[in-house]
Image (tube, rainbow, N blue to C red; front, side, top):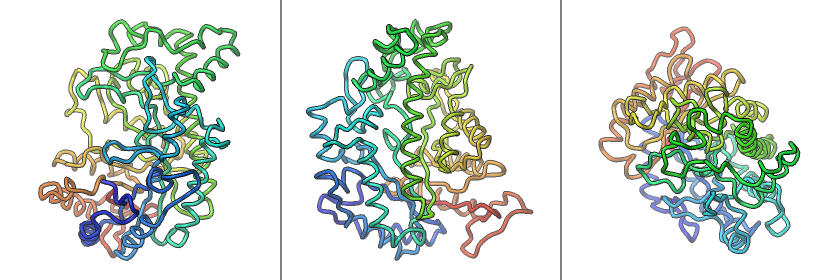
Length: 438
């Protein structure tokens, strides 16, 4: 549920206050607060309304907890938060500001990467609009920086994650891997230019003709089958172009955040998804349609890690509560192996990894899996447990969460390098292991 109401007041302030006190007593370091574009810049471009969020940040500061802020440039059906009104109005007359699939269906919960540098918003590009939002946030919340706000995650795409909305029209129990989302006119124009530069203009007319639909098995007579188009020169051209759009967007957004917040000395991060379905296949179709050209022949996370390293940004990886044994066999899934591969790539490029769970209602096994993913050489600087609310504070889940926090605070990672601060949080020399609730 959105913490700020339509009239910029705090929703359920008594419940939030009680929750903050409970977390403080438990020994949690802090909380995470999503700040929504559709709330703070709702009515018109450049007209910001921060009062509700300021009240909430002040409440968090008075509770004695730290705060990690997520700047959300996407909408959320679950939270009933749309994009700003003025963005939606532009979209009515210029629908190509949104991603489109092969059938022309639009994804209207975030902007297409294709408008990053297109001046479609009253003469401004999407990047200029994002920058204005970040700069205003930094100015208004300057009194809370470092003392209370210790980290900021910049939204990178759907649900805040760096990816295409490749599975947005997939049924809940669908067996597919999603669809390519490159059919808005700006992205198709860019594809056409790249094909022209290679003197293969036919390659730039559209995406793969044999790509699977959302719920189609991607290994059966499609682009991703054994010996399919993904292994041809055309396939390599298209997938390289498609993933490059994602990587370039990440570079622009992380660079914007790092440069805008450089004098605030807070931690800046971005979030990757853990797209683990079909990971055990050669073509990794679910990752590929989401923009990660990661196959049996290629490490699709290498260049992304370089971008995070270049911009001195930390990477949030969700799914640290997932186990392979809990995945259906027909999904060819392996969250554990994928997480390990991404972490190894980050380690190679000196990118600091922060962790996050995927499911709110945890089990004994899932909490043990999180603990395993925070131990030894896997230790992370920050773990964000999502998400505060009714499910989180349910008797069963909060009991498990409380036990997890106590175990984490007592966990001996390395007896030679371990210290414990006076609040009981695990402290590894040179690195803080902080636990925050989202």
